[in-house]
Amino acid sequence: MYGAKPFLLQLGALPVPRRCTLEGEGKGSVRTCYFDKGTIMQEVTAWQKPSRMEFEITGDTLPGNQWLTFSKAGYELTEEAGEIRVTRHTIIESRLWLRWDWEPIERLGVRSEHDFVLQSLDQKLRLAKRD
Image 1: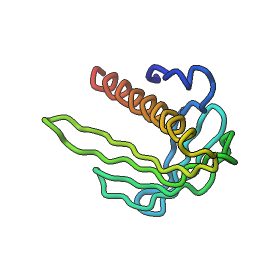
Image 2: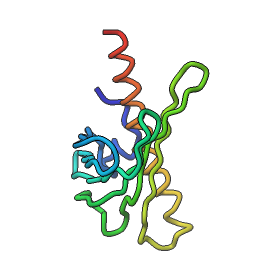
Image 3: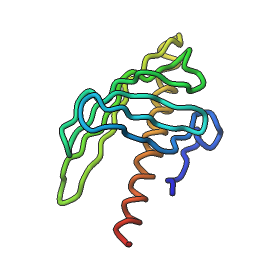
């Protein structure tokens, strides 16, 4: 079950995240994220279970990686008013110029993928609570 696809994912302008796997536990573990058009390989660089996990991207097969690559990412979980807030962050490296022209589009793309991943997670958790 996936969340609603943001506009850029509907257009096919961005790869659609499908799932991630994790081999191992703790720092040094290997995480692989699968998209409809490739993969991103990551190494866990920090793990403070259950509240924080950080990754360094070690490789990817996504289209467009000659212009834009992911370098680091992570999740942080915090409790607020009895609920858990999940924050996702990503650091990208761009080789597109003019920066003032491309940066808003890149931010929109990353935000679109984050929204999709977090909505999908929320949807899965709500379904699991009902079962």
